Amino acid sequence: MSKVGLIVPTLNAGSLWKYWLKAFEQQTRKPDFLLLIDSSSSDDTVVLASLYGFEVRVISKSEFNHGGTRQSGIDMLPEADIIVFLTQDALLADPDAIKKLLAAFVDQQVGAAYGRQLPHRNAGPIAAHARLFNYPAESQLRGIEDRARFGIKTVFLSNSFAAYRRNALMQVGGFPIDTIMNEDTYVAGKMLLSGWKIAYCADAQVFHSHDYGFLDEFKRYFDIGVFHTDTAWLQHTFGGASDEGMRFVVSEMHYLIKRAPWLIPSAVLRTGLKWIGFKLGALHKGLPRVIRRCFSLHKTYWLRALS
Image (tube, rainbow, N blue to C red):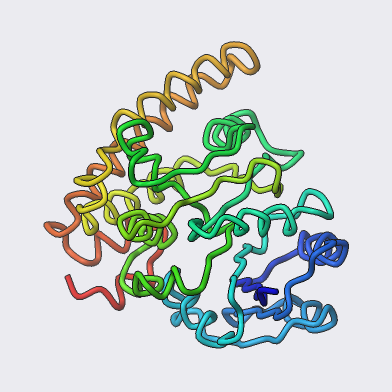
């Protein structure tokens, strides 16, 4: 039977954390190894996790890197055949969530699987639509042969609730340590090119959503632009992001017209900020580093970036 590890990166998990831990405690399939990598929290994140059986490794905030930190966690769990990742704000929606996610690995061609993210119960309409658009009710199994159908969405994957077959992950070199974000998308692309498949498990669910402010929307898409420019092979292989972006905008307008028409001006402004952020991110190499840090949501990345 495969050994399963769970890795959770944390930083000041806050009031949701006790509910996260209770939801985890109710899981019918508990991982064999529990690892928390904490970026020097000042609240009770670490104390509570220890009470629930987590091994804790504390790093400095400046050490955290989306890919590198997760890869270091994998290296700490050498006996785990499958590694599950969760974030501190992804609340397991039912007691079988992890069990249902792991079921995808019965198929020996599956290198990675991710679950469905439902909006938090207090999520606003804009945040709710983003989750409903990106995480449909139907499961999918995607291979390299599906790129004509799904385009850039072929490599969609989220480490907020995902699992990886260890040998598949290591075959493609593990998580990258030099990307600003989207280490999950990067690995998905590498796995598909190596013949593995990506499973989307719609019945394995967490509550996870963000009500981003206007400035955070801009900064997030600046970082997305940086990522796609620095990993141009992804769009060359699977197609550009513009078609998917337009499909999202049309879907969002239809959703808001029916449910929250007063938010349409806000959504239009957000779309503009996302577009500007993405374009500036794509041109980041021509910007001074101080500007890149100012525009970025992941500021510590620029302390390590060489260009």
